Length: 63
Image (cartoon, rainbow, N blue to C red; front, side, top):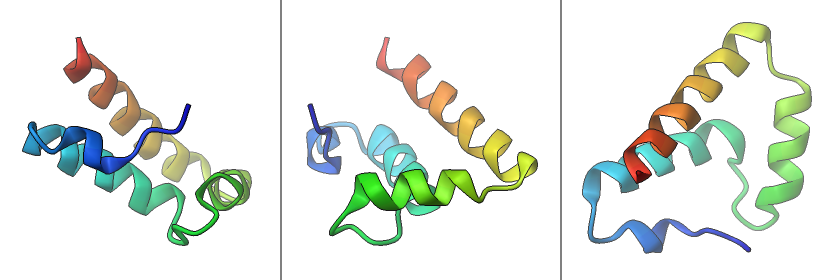
């Protein structure tokens, strides 16, 4: 299942957090999954930690 940013239209804070994660993982929106995998493979440890913290924060907000 693909999650899109439009699913968070009613919660602007979640939409912003989701957009930030997307910006760090997949600049190319045409093939987001492939680009995200490639980007993650070349991240430094500190970049990966930033993305991991953003993802954890995002999922905590979903509860």
